[in-house]
Length: 287
Image: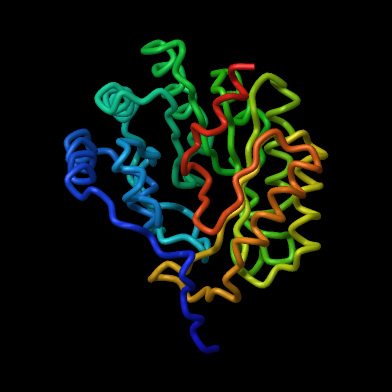
């Protein structure tokens, strides 16, 4: 298949490299990983320039091998109990008001890392009770007791990405399951309706417009509050090719459809990622 040329709208402007190095030094000093770096996010410059980052906890090696992701996979090291304090310290140094924490998938850990997520949430809340805490969690194999552990820590937002339309799951993320992902978000909302739920979708992998709308409807049925839609970009290590570069006008149309369906906040644009400019939805927590 011939490689599709990247369009003009996916080009990223200049960034302040000095500010980027400053954030990187803080992260290295505290031995922390970010999904920004590990997944080669196209927005890394913009985020680091603003002194924001999405912390990647539980190591930088994932037990799954999703085709869309550039994070290393294999056998991870044991969980680091000091990581909780390091995340809090980085939050202080960067003076974050909205902190986003995600993780690799840890199928090797009995609870999938649920207690680790809960521990970080509780420690951050103790540091600053007004801090907005957003967790981007894996599917935890759909185990209700582990989802409950995270919910009971009371983060403000729990995000779990469905990633792609159901037809493409086997091709793109074969170790995951669309219905299980929906169930995770459904359980969070049932356990604590006050927690905002969020999910994200990649496009440009051969999905149809009708399939994207069906995913929106599925998420709306389980009362998902926030939706992000962005263009899939092929990582260097992946053989999963881009099928199409979606035009910004269609992203805008998806945004309008999602709002009409009932989402409270929607970010839909080529370079949108789950945690990029996550603070734009903070107004929901103020109402």
